[in-house]
Length: 74
Image 1: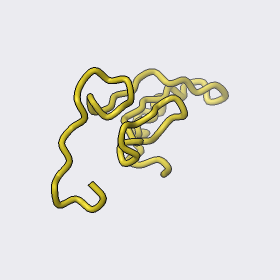
Image 2: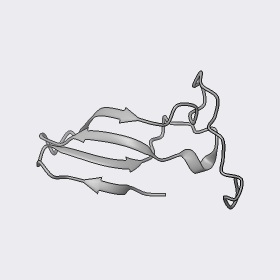
Image 3: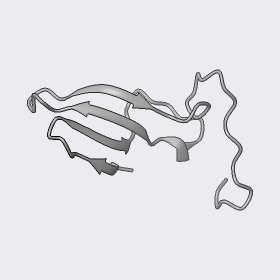
Image 4: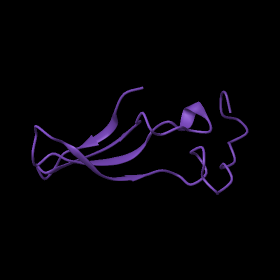
């Protein structure tokens, strides 16, 4: 699916919506989530933060969010 909404404004951190091999969504449409990568050492980028909507990842204690009834493939 790729990377979406990439921000790289300060030269130190990349902010984007994307997936990760260790993130297993409940619904395949929820595979993208916010990630923050520290690139101050470009030869060793390091994830320093991530956020996803509660209930969209397998193992979350929250219930999955309701889907819009008119959404294609909901």
